[in-house]
Length: 296
Image (cartoon, one colour):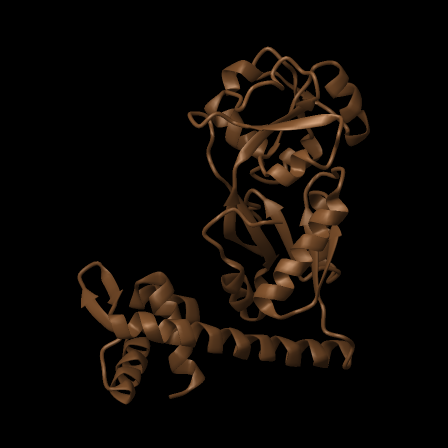
């Protein structure tokens, strides 16, 4: 048994497909299939049931995956450490991330929590800055950041963007706003009020605003610089943002309400890095993937 077999096994398990795993590794389907067959022979049992629609794990396969994914994650972390050690000449290993969002009150706490999640899931110390829109992409290309964490997908030819979870959309407004007494707010109820839009951010990626615009194209958007957000709220304006409860507790003068279920659609939370660093960053990104709203 070697690490290559374990890597192929994990890729097939995650994708449910020999061809997808082969494409990911730049190998032939035959090479991946043989590695899996050799591993099954060594373990003395089948890991997958081969079906017309793909590969379905056996009970042994599911049990083996629990250990294999952990082993692979630690091995990839060791490779990352070795690469960073060579690059930075034995400097302390830290993953340099940037939260790619507009500025918001309490972002220091969110960035601290992101770093804690990274440390827990990857076993790697992280430094998390705040970088807005194109500033984040520039930081990637200049080597100041290893990756960005962004709400919504970013589509650029030179970056890889992978979803690591989803967040629900919500509506932020001043305390005492006509909608503030509701448990949830529909987009039709938002329609009479101006909705803040930061063109310097919303044009850079698929943001919460973009998701809501598709569901309610008639909303009235106004460009609002970050410094003018308090005035916007004073004029009964609202802000479409991440509907995570912690966000609503960061500004005492404001309240956050979730979007009504009929209007709500999950917004992807993504990790973004240069394609030239796929070999180094893809294994880490897969280990960050979650199936529920992250507790940042």
